[in-house]
Image 1 (cartoon, rainbow, N blue to C red):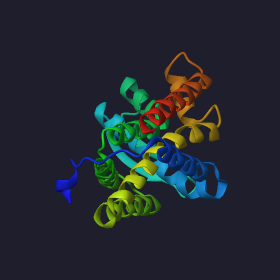
Image 2: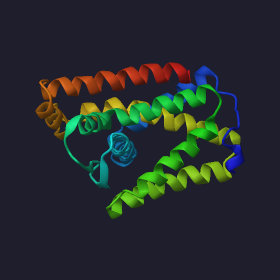
Image 3: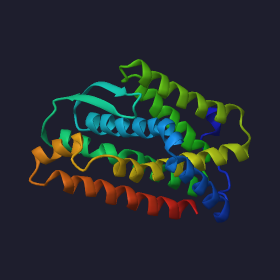
Image 4: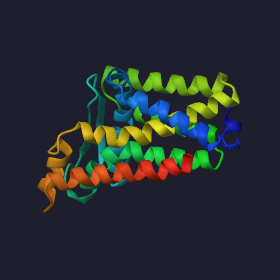
Amino acid sequence: MLSRIGEIQIPLPAPVALFLGILTFIAVLGPMLWKVTVHVNTIAHEAAHAMVGFGAGRSIRSVKINPDGGGATVMLPDRGLGFGVAVFAGYLGPSAAGLIAAWLISTGHMVAVMWLGLLLLAVLLLMVRNFFGAIAILVCSALLYLTVRHATVGAETAVAYGVAWFLLLSGPKKVLSIPIKSQDAKILAKMSPLGAWVWYYLWLLGTIGALVAGGAMLV
């Protein structure tokens, strides 16, 4: 299976790609479905905190994915520019992942999207410290693995598009669902001369921009 990572497939026609985007939008918009799918967004959010924090020289002590759709990443030292960048990266994480997936899809690397997702989930599993978080990550990993292992080429392509669309659409959805003075915004406000509302709108603009750019690549 690993030999297929570099496999090239033909991107879907624009109308089909847009149709998959509309279906994904319904899944993101629907309150009942969002209660389940929000955990995928949270996984990407906390992964962004952890990866950026680690890259900035922080020690990642724990990652938690909570049943209510929230999460937490504990890193030390919890101060300085590197910590601030890691905090800011969280709400942009799903959108950044969606952009990468959209770019890979536009170049025909649908299988690579799922293998990259599996790799990131495996790394995050080593950091997670609560039972629900571990189960959520394992379920996502199992779905991606089964797709790569048993699905047809057409199904693999559809799943890759669905993953990309979901990450891109869930980014602004998540930001719009939080208060302007969220915990991350308060932390950044204390570390900078900018108010919490400025950080909120930077997240909103960033996620909307990623949706526009990623959507253009997909269709």
